[in-house]
Structure formats: structure tokens, C-alpha cells
Image (cartoon, rainbow, N blue to C red; front, side, top):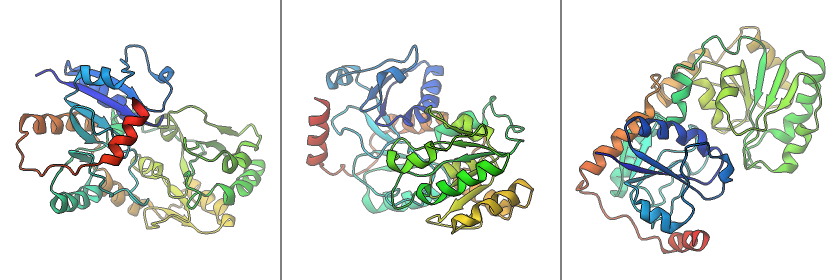
Length: 335
């Protein structure tokens, strides 16, 4: 049966998450449309369909709305499907239930088990372990295991003022860049405070660059090691078998090269780049628990899970809680 899917994006990083789902749906002969509540429509690619109004969404009548963010307009037609905006589970709110979704598509044991407990507790949604659509290109035909063979450091700080490493590491990175031949790329989160980013943007060197585009996946493939704090991008990087140096991570563990002081950064990077990686075994275990799928078919599993729920709507689930404040907020934004 031909289906219609609405891809709902509120931040620019949603494109890398949702486009693999779009490709999988197109391969099945399904219809796909986008609703952008924030991103510039100019970011859409040729052939991608944009719906600009709530009336157009209702006329499109999607069977399911696929969402990488935390919320979705409750009055949009269709099954509401949470596909998540990041792998990391360390940040506050990852397991918060807001009463907006019918189906949660989880990544692996680390996320599936907690959401299954929450499903039993609340009773109005289902949980299916599918893997994360964003990872499909990492493990598809374009995946090059030889990439990242040079000393290339990707610095991806989180945006949260209470968690970001940017103010602490910017002076140290400037000093390392000036003395070491290592190549650096900095990728800011779309929500990064410009004042926090300013010292890093001020660094000037031939071996240092700021990645201004929206795409993260090419940077993950190219880099040798990541430096971060509590960014969910760390989990994506570890799926490729690469080490992460984490500054004051909220949930430090053997899967990370943990540092607590800026002065430790250079030594930690030197050790990893020289092949002394204390996180290797822990990282492999963590990646298997976080996202065991390496077949590049997570999008297919998401669509399969949606199809099963659409085919069997009488699942015995409770009615989702009424959310008048959220309904009104989205109605006021989108009318």
C-alpha cells in the first residue's frame, strides 16, 4: 500500500536525519513532503516537496509524521513517530515523555530498555528498536573504512552553556594549533551561542578551519579523533571505531578518553594519535550497546515499524494525554 510521510524539521540538523528516511520511502514508491518550522526552505534539494501551511499538511493527509525533535504539532494528521535528534543519552531530557508520540524508534539496548519501561508505565505509545536513520550513509556503500588515516582532529563542542567546553578549551586549542601540525576542524551546534564560539572563530591558521555547512557525516568520516564534552556527536563518531577525547563529560566511562583539565588535552591527543588508546575496548562495547546495526538499513526498519502500527491500529494503547498548551503554542506559531 502506498503511504504518505511528512518530515517535520525545526532545526537544520534534521536534514541529515530525515533524508535517509526519504530515500527509503521513495524506493518503496511512497510520497514524501517536508514541513519546515524554522529551517530556511532554501536548504531543500531539487525534487523535495515543501508544504508551507497547516492547510496543505491536512490536505496531504500524511499516514505518519517523522520527527527528529522533541515535539510535533498535535493537530497534524497521522501517526507521530519519534526518530530522535542524537544518539547521546547523557543529556537531561532524552527520556522525557511529553505525550506527543505514538511510536518511538530506538537505536539499541541502551535506549530501547528505558523506553520500553516508560511505555509500560504510560501505556499510550509503542517502542521498536530500529537503529538511527542518520547512520545509514555511514554504513552504506559510501562508507570508506580507510578514511581518517591522517592526524585530523574534529572538535564538536555542545551548545549548552553548562556543558560546553568551548570557553575552557579555546585558548589551549589556539596554542596547540600554533605548535603542532595536526589538522583541526571545528563544527558548532546550530544553537551555539555566538559569544561562546567567538574565541574559536578568532583562531587563524592553515591547519585550522571552521565547518560552516550543516552536514556532520562527512566530517565524521574524515577525522581521526574527536574532541568534545557531552555532545551526542561523540556517539556517532564511536560507531566508526574512532576515539573521542571528552572534556568533563557528564557521564564519563571507559568508552571515552576522559580529561578534566584543559592542560590534559594535548597529552591525550598525542597518546591517541600515537596509537595509545585506553578507550578501545570500552568504546567497542559502548557502540554495540548504543547502536548495534551496521547494515545501513535503519530507515527501512523505521518504515517497517510504522507500517506494522498502521496495519494494526487497534493495539490496546491508551489515548494520548490532551496537551492544550502545546496545541495552542503550535497553532499560534503555524497558523
